[in-house]
Length: 273
View 1 (cartoon, rainbow, N blue to C red):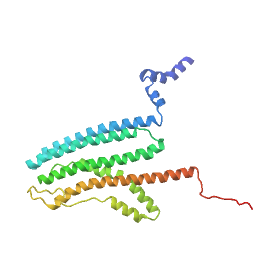
View 2: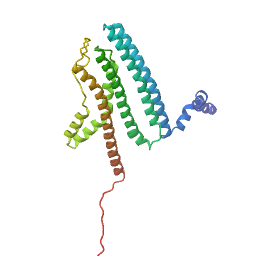
View 3: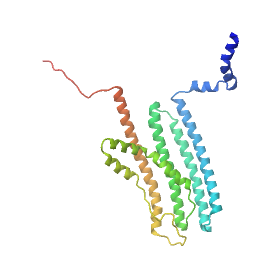
View 4: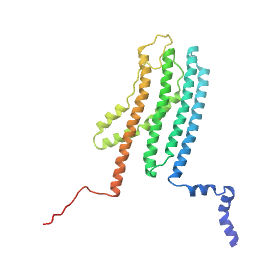
């Protein structure tokens, strides 16, 4: 009976050793918060890059098939749309490369887990999202230029616009955090001013209204010019948000260090009488 109970208790370890050869236990024992995190984060970003490339290409192909099946546009618009679709498909490759390179950068040495999670990881992703939005915006600007030259409304990716709308607020959250801090201190008007300034984009009501009569309108040219300016503005504001986050992180880090070891800048001297 005693031997049977011992065999029963040893059964999980026996299965683990025979079936998985102790793989899970070996990985967990060998994992540490420095090299382990770097290795797995790098691997995750590599797979994310491949997944993003596949999803973007498949989505564009499906959308293109639907467009050419249902579209009633003329021949010139369809020829231009083929080029526009190829531009969007090409944009997926630098985006995938960018994701992989950011993961490789995170896979390098870092100064502890706290700094890695709240400083390196956050800053890397703010920059990654900002640069992805810039690539998508640049491809859209090129296609808008082609639309202007051909004076026809070409295929536009709704998923690309959705990506811009979804990702843009993520890399601007440092500005939102600063705005919240300023509101607490009663300086909300400064935060509102900075927030309004950094959310500025050039817009025009004549966008996507090319008539096909080859009478190029100055308003359409302004729309095309504004598309490229918006890409530059997005990059500038991204770096502003990076600087703001670096400032807030340094402020919190200093505060935490002071709470852990408080010291008052007061010196008391005794005079011998």
